[in-house]
Image (tube, rainbow, N blue to C red; front, side, top):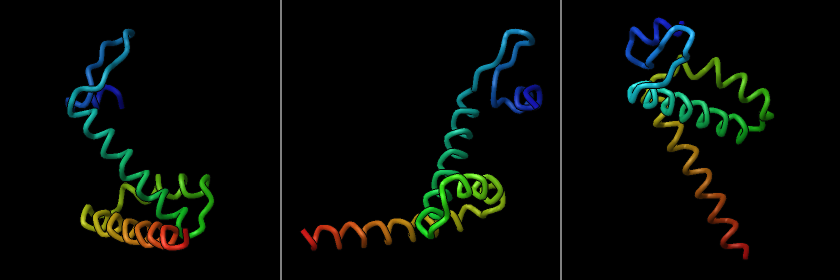
Length: 91
């Protein structure tokens, strides 16, 4: 797999010496991390425990369309802002 990522220009690989991510690899890794975090946050919001949310997010993140992820982010923001607004009004 490391060799395939090297061929795809996502990392620099030297046999027996290790590897490092290229700029493209770093961008891809950050994108994957963002998707995973977004899905975990949503799953936890609906009551899924953190361990299960991480496991489920790993399976889901590879199958969602980018537009679906944008809509999910909007939904999370609405819920968070609504919750924060209620807290501010209560104090």
